[in-house]
Image (cartoon, rainbow, N blue to C red; front, side, top):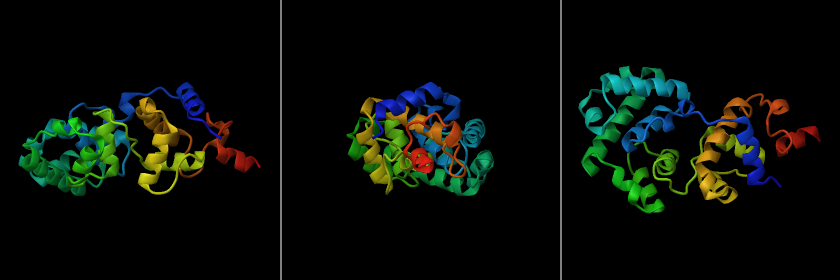
Length: 220
């Protein structure tokens, strides 16, 4: 059976984490991290990073700035992220609610226990399970494991997790040591982007080809 230590060892040899490759690593500001995560939905981190930079330049990324700006101003600033009008509405709605509930400051959520903070975050507009878990792991160093499409696919192929979002999250939290959650999250995404793609995965040159159950099945 695949072990977490051998999996991480193989991935560490292959990948070096570059902050530029992950939009969620581009900020330490709590609200801006929520903004960045929303921008990253259904697009590449390259496109969402460009949108975040443009939003900073043209509008600002604080809840105060976003709640004052028009939907059209926001949409034009984040055009490179795709679905820009839908995302602009989401950001305005989120900013308005954060201003109403917390007077613009959501840092206090990081001091809450994990489950309480997670529920509170997920009660905000357009903040789902993944966005809440990214916020809590990346900024609060809370023991949780965000699951995106890459991690869902890679985890299933590696035979370590499958099912619903919550099923996969809990399985990965059992599989990896809590101190490795953030690194494992980033490495699995890197694997999914470069080798374990949805279509035509590059199994023959994958750094996990000697330990991956999917490769063994195909060889058999």
